[in-house]
Every structure is written in C-alpha cells, then in structure tokens.
Image 1 (cartoon, helix red, strand yellow):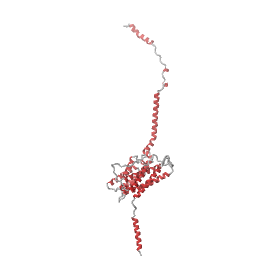
Image 2 (cartoon, rainbow, N blue to C red; image 1 turned 30 degrees about the vertical axis):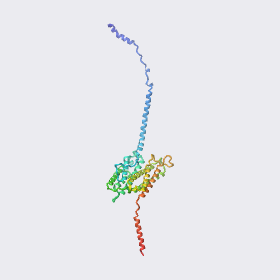
Image 3 (cartoon, helix red, strand yellow; image 1 turned 30 degrees about the horizontal axis):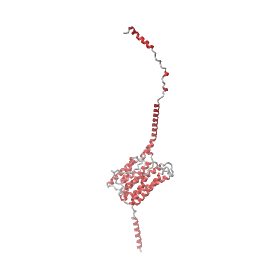
Image 4 (cartoon, rainbow, N blue to C red; image 1 turned 60 degrees about the vertical axis):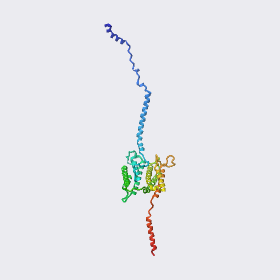
Length: 362
C-alpha cells in the first residue's frame, strides 16, 4: 500500500507528466482544403447535363404543343363521314328515302356536329370543307323530302309532316341548325310511322324513282356549272382556294346523297329492276354517282397544267358528274310517263268536225 506521502505527490507528478508531454501544434488555416479548388465528380456533371437537356426538351415540347394545339384541333374537327348508310337489322322503314334522311341527319349531329352553329373561337369555325358538305347535304335532303311530300299529297295538299320537314331542313341565316334538324327528323319519323299504319300515302319506288332521277340530274347540272366556274377562274391560292374547296365538297355531298337514295329506292323497286334495259341504266347511274361520291382527296387541288405533281380534283369531279347527269337524265326520260294526248285528240276532233261541217254546207 503506497504511503500517504506518495499519494499526496501523485497528482503533482501527474500534472507534471501532462505538461511534459508534447502537444500537437495547431494546423495553420492555409493547410485546410479550399472548396473553390474542389473538382466535382464527372458522374454528377453528366447527370446535370442530362437533366438540363430533359428539362429543355420538355419546355420546347410544351411550347410546340401550346402553339400547335389549335391547328391540330382544327384538323381533327374536320370529320366528313361519307361511309355508306346501312340500316340496322332492327329498323324497318316504310319509305327508304325517309330512313336515309334520318340517318344522314343523325350522323352529322352525333358525329362532327353542325359546323355553322359553332362560336367564332371554335376550331370548326375555321373549316371550309365540312360546312360546305353539311349545307349541301341539308339542302339536298330538303329538296328530296319536298318531292316525297308532293308524291304523298292528298286532296288537302302535300303531306304535312314531310312539308314541315322540308322547310326545317333549309338553313335560315342567323338561326341554329341543330334544333331545326332535330325537329325535321321527328317530323320524318312521324310520317313514316303513319305510313306504316296506313294513315298516310306511302310513295312507291316505281313512282318516286323517275322523279328522283330528274332531281339528281338537276343537282349534277348545278354542280357542273359551279365546278366549271371555279376551274376556269383565275387561281389565286395553292393548291386550291376556299371557294374551290367549297364547290368540290358541295358537289361531293350531293353525289353521296344521290347514291344512297338510289340504293334505297333500288332495293324495293321490283317492278322496275325486272326490266333489263331499266336495270342497266339504273346500274350505270348508280356507278356514276358512286365514283363522284367516293372521290376523297387529302388536299383538294385546282391547278392548271399537266398535273405532274397535283391533279385537278375539280375537273375529275366534273367528269364524274357529267356521266351521272347523262345517266340520270336518260333514266328519267325512260321512266317518265308518256305525255298526255287528250288535248291534242280533242283539238283534232274539233278540227275534223269543222271540216265536215264545211263540206256538208252546199
């Protein structure tokens, strides 16, 4: 056991030993690593460059999307549905032309919508082809329904529902077409329902087909004149002007409508299709209108010259319509009832009686 004196001296010796030990000298500040001279990692540099490229590409895509959104909406909203009109198996129309009219109206309203009803900011307000297509379709349906109302006329005059539908299908400046088209479709449906129940005269295809062919011939003649005016006009736009596009799609709309109505009438005109001559003429008219209806270019072109790069679509449409006009007018002349000769016979009889009286007078 250490003595008391040694125990008393221990702290002092310990302190002396601590003082005797060498202490580390402080490091001068200049020996520390400076962050200004530090080199970043190459991996982080590559990651930063990649991230900046992704952010820049995203910003550029966003700018392009914002700038091109409206033109893209204009292109997408121009949906011209020229597919065939096919009745579902659960539908049975007493008058096929009425069924075609209702399907055409429903297709335009439920599909692209009526372009002329859009506000000025809407993409469809910038279109040319779709409004021309829809206006010509409505006008053609109005004329055809008016024809049916006259065929189904009674002693009181043309059928009320058909006459009302014909008026509603005609566009009125400054008035929305959707309510008018909806009311026209309802009037057409009422007439077909009454005709199926025997409450209205149902026009037979044998009776309406000659009149329809004469009507289609007038459509072709009018569109031929409009296309000819645009083909011979001075071209101020490439590849076609808005007037050229409107004339082309108006003719195409009436051609599509005529073709669908011919198919609908042909399906039930048993008394006419049995005649080989009439059947051949009807097939020619159907084929002519079909070629005009199926002409659907990506861009309408109305260029002069040899058409080395772009054809003249207006000239092609005019050629098809010329054939359709000749076929329709020829068939209408064949199917037309003979002209009445009652008046001529009466005049001849009176002239004969007068001559006999002159001879009998001494």
